[in-house]
Image 1: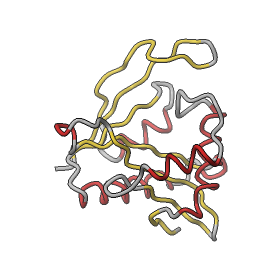
Image 2 (image 1 turned 90 degrees about the vertical axis):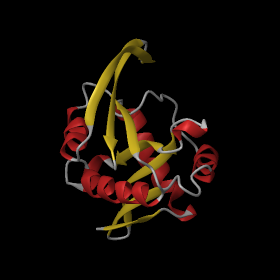
Image 3 (image 1 turned 135 degrees about the horizontal axis):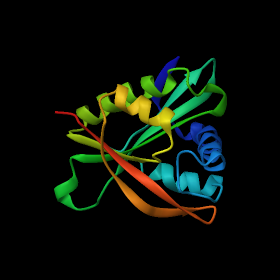
Length: 162
């Protein structure tokens, strides 16, 4: 398994894995599948401190993680929002942990003091991964969004890096 910084040639693989997360309704409130143009624009925003990394196994991208801007106010410059997506066929095999370990190291190198993330309370696999890496539950936003016409709660989690 190779964990490395993503390059433009990885965009289609990242898009495919992201779209699986959208289809499976376990990782995001997004409901519309993303196309290449959307992902190119998303990738272009991940410059400087806001990194995207991928997990590559035998030449195939099997997961990715990104540090995203949490808030554009300067007071929040030390806080990164986290995304982690694993290919359907590779979930539950430790790839998420490897990605988290690597993205946290990058976050420290780029002077982030905290990572926040938002997950569904019913996503036990994701919460297990985050808790194992030292993330704590901050709270649950009730009826935070809509997914397939139903209100969905969203759990906030955080990890202090310092």
